[in-house]
Length: 489
Image (cartoon, rainbow, N blue to C red; front, side, top):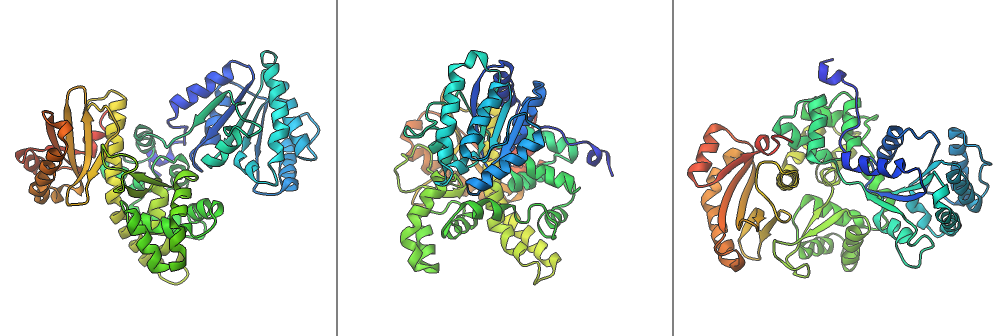
């Protein structure tokens, strides 16, 4: 085992979120905190890290099952026993709420995970019982040293429980924290600690795992974080004990009802598709479902945040030329490249399936690369590092004709616009320069508001060679690659 593989896993990133949580805990005063974010994003680990850092010993953690009241109470009793709390175990939802209140009053921090399940009709009464306890604790806030943390992964259901005006717990929160993906700097911290952080490795792993720390740790624990692409895919997805073989299926199939996979799979395999293309696909596959597609897309966007609709820069949100993308890299990679091969392990040679999955994944990295570049531009600008100074989010531009620009970055203070073309292979950039020049000319003619601005053109690849860098410069482009864009992160 080499030195990188032998290093112990640590807690990576989340410095701002950790500081926020530690500040709340340090006050030793009543609080009611909501922590939300996608599954596996590290919500529970973040809370645990903050509690340890602040030396909190009085802790009760409860993970709510997707069950009926009896199942929830039985599970809660198990956690009470595990954490050895000194209150009578609950016998129903009312006594569960009252015992949580009593523990908080005694200085405990009680963390209730998968809180969104209390949105279910059979469990909803718990929120009324909890409201009574929260109101009593808030009334005596100066004398209460404990607090309540509720964690959940479904945005709209958490919002319905805690933010809807008609909900029992409306306006009771004292703090709210949304846990996003790890930033690129934190991903690089993981790679530098446990494997090589070269450009190709970053693109492969980020396109697959994005900023979900649990997935990087799974690869670390399986001993394949430093392995080649196909070995990593084989161990994580294609053996009977693979930790990620059922991850995506359990994630969205457990939560979704209906024919949502029809929409998700199409968008994953056709990133940037239009609403019309989605409807055409549904009509060709399952005509009866076509009329419901609009509702499916809305639920996937608003409730689960699995799909996002992007508009070209400067476009109004109501314009009809929006494009759809899977918002989460892991889900997109699974649906576009891994799901079908992984489901076929009992019928075809594993080596063939892994090879096919790797090829599909490489194809899916095209959009992943554009997303990575935009994320790096934003992160560098936010942290004040050398590079382009942004004044708004990086976007692309397209129209109903033939103008297509991968990256549009604006510096409104200095009146500079940078227009970028992104290709994973630097060798693929040079043949495209004349065509991209035409895209730039049409864009600038159309964008009257940018007249008089300095226009910069960027040729962005995973890795530039001296020859491709020189070719870009001779064509009037700024050559950039991942090595440059990750410098100092």
